[in-house]
Length: 202
Image 1 (cartoon, rainbow, N blue to C red):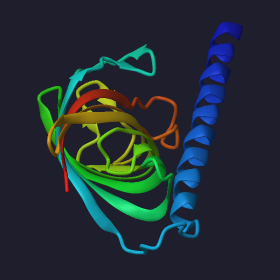
Image 2 (cartoon, one colour):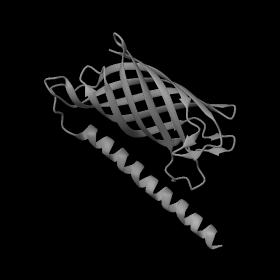
Image 3 (cartoon, helix red, strand yellow):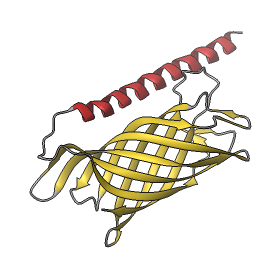
Image 4 (cartoon, one colour):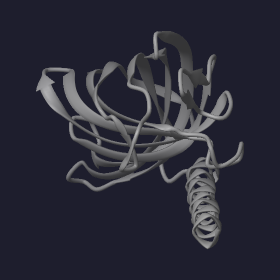
């Protein structure tokens, strides 16, 4: 009895901590959108397009996933006004990453769209980048076999790195995590995606 109660407490505490982290990261990301511009440009500008595919990831933040998933999508990166780069061409900026694609698991397909504000570090021309972001994603289906994401809306956390491949083409790695942060109960399970990206800088 005590063991079961302790386990329930552990699960609830973990879900609460996860919820707080996701909410704070999402709020910080959106604060970047509200920060006054440090550059002369105030327009949302398309920086690049990319295609990406999951190549690994059968765990959710270290825990085994009950179902295996594949994801393929298209992404567009839009530069946001806040940025600061030195005369050497290195610094920090913000951008909005929008994506749409297909996720497949347990023999079922789902449309996935996401919108994630990001903080970027690297070169001003976008050849070398490191990014971190938190936003949201919508799934057309959220039950796949034995795995239940909890609902169509998922918090989305991401981190990525990119480097030049040939002229304006680039290659990158992206980690993407979906979770409802426990808002639909403690029995829901998100997913981790380790993805390879091919990007074209505009």
